[in-house]
Each structure stands twice: as structure tokens, then as C-alpha cells.
Length: 95
Image (tube, rainbow, N blue to C red; front, side):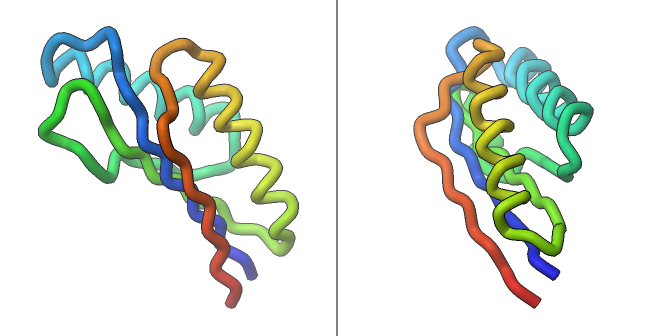
């Protein structure tokens, strides 16, 4: 079993307060959850309204499959225009 972990740091340009930020974050999370076989949550920068950190996980028996899904997801988040990715990190844990 292989667990893939993706952490992305995003810059949010549209929100003017924390309430608007939560709406944008929820749109991104819901979009990813509905399109990909992953679990995700906001994991950092909770108190800032112009940036956030999201964490995603996926379980599979192939590292290549997880990497492919994560790469497509990164492209999808960028293409959405909701946020700008300034850092991403993928990690694999083998059991």
C-alpha cells in the first residue's frame, strides 16, 4: 500500500476577508474532491485571508498513479483561476 500526500500553498487574490477566503477554499476543495479520488482539507494559514495551504491524500498500490492524479489536480487548480500555486510538495509513504 502506498499513501500519497500532496501539500499546496496558494495565493488568493480575490478575497477581501476571511469569510470570502473560506468560500474560495471550499470551491477549490469541492472541485478537487468531485473530480479526483482524494481526500483534502485546509491545513495551514487559517488566519490569513490572502493565502492558504491545502493537504490532499490518496491511497493506491502504484506510486505512478498517485503522481499522475496529483499532477492533473495541480493543473486543474491552476486552470480554475481561483488561486495561484506558489509551492507544492508530493510525498509517498510505503507500507
